[in-house]
Length: 320
Image (cartoon, rainbow, N blue to C red):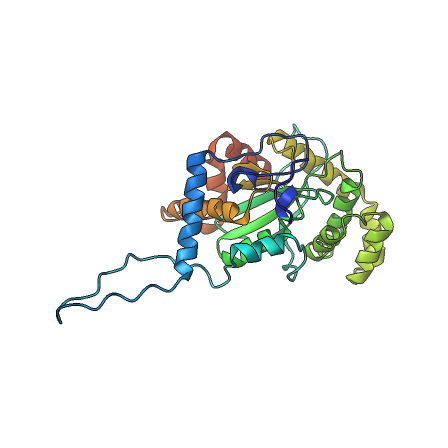
């Protein structure tokens, strides 16, 4: 296991784009760290965001009545939902600290012949026609993945029109209770309560016994007859098997693993790094949209054109 800071997004998706010092779970040692130049760019992007929050200094008094204050370069103000680095670091330590988002569903792509198991609909948050799709391959028993819980919510809050986060199961075989937890989360998703169930699993990673899943389902007032039936439904287990094999085929064996419009990163670095990668993806996606591509098709086209990784992601997710 590779560990960065303490907190949430650890086992999830964002090392490649996240920055130096990324960590994650699993045998995958490809931590997707940035080169020094890339790290410098991320730092500069963070400084720019910080600067945007600081009120501009008043211009010096003009010596002549006709003189005008120097024109300041235009800056993009951070969203009103932006949080400081310290606030985000604190949230990483507290999965479930904010309300669970509304459950949405990302339709399963066609069955890939090279993967065992069967595809199924995946829980998502954010607008379904978002320009950027962030596919997160995660594991409920991974201590690093829990660090990404709140940062991923924050991502959708900051970019509500442009980002959709899609959860994919990568229950590592080295984590004995990861697969049962993944199956239980699918059962919760079938009743529209995936994200609430997800938060509670990450809050109590030591309590992943079958009876704990039943207690959580009762707490969330799920239909227990349906929940128990879905726990035993072979299709839920097949979906977990399929998505785990997909993660491996995509080179994201460790957790968390992220694909931002097809760009891969494995492990967790920081919210600032993730956010910077997403902003770059939004800029590229808007350029595609400006050429007349329908908004709902932009993420698919951007992903397919994002190198070999992106082409493979697009094939698995949309069948193209």
